[in-house]
Length: 314
Image 1 (spheres, rainbow, N blue to C red):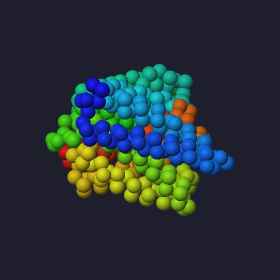
Image 2: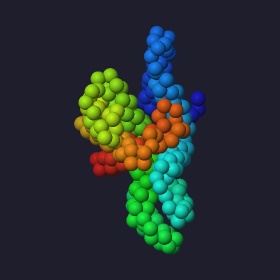
Image 3: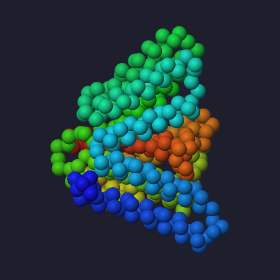
């Protein structure tokens, strides 16, 4: 109980609501199994089960200690980068270069944890951008050099740099009152991003007919896309005063931004998977695929949300 005693009441309300939604989802799965035994809901059941695990781990890290949350996000980033490297073709000469890419993860998240904004914002886009080709040159292999350098740096930017913006939220100073502390800022981002994914999936399944990007992600529909925007914006408005310093206008703007950015992030990784000829980035999360499948939207929403907050409230 001492862990929860230090938490904002607003944060506790939202966390309780999240677990309430999970209980509701579990009841729906249970009811469908009993009333419609011939209906194939195995994927839905696996998704809900995985959501329980992910939510418990994330909320646990969030409420216990901010530093533990940063470590958790760094681990997620590591697993996402690992899945990315397992998908793409790499040259034998680049195996030692991958070590330096992985080493960037603890450094990037350390800069985020201590709030060293200057180094945090340029470490990967500048220093790792220069280090990767420099280390490749030492290997002496020029075949597919440009393709390899670009592929490695793109993966590092997407799975490490972009995701690390979420961890910076836990230590950043905001020039206004935070009703749920820094943890509320992070929870708001994660909740809206994941809710948008679920809303797009549900609206698409229920009412979607017209495909929005059929060559990249055939399951995405126009109804799902706009349904996700409306749902996420409504929730963004409802949670704004509980978790964030945002005005209702800014909350509405963020609801739309996160919805659109999340959709693009999702489709972005789908395009990579199509290019590589794989269905999922991994198998760690039953019903969802891999870690990168689950945080693909966050790779776009985290930096956009961070810089929106940084521009208007710092």
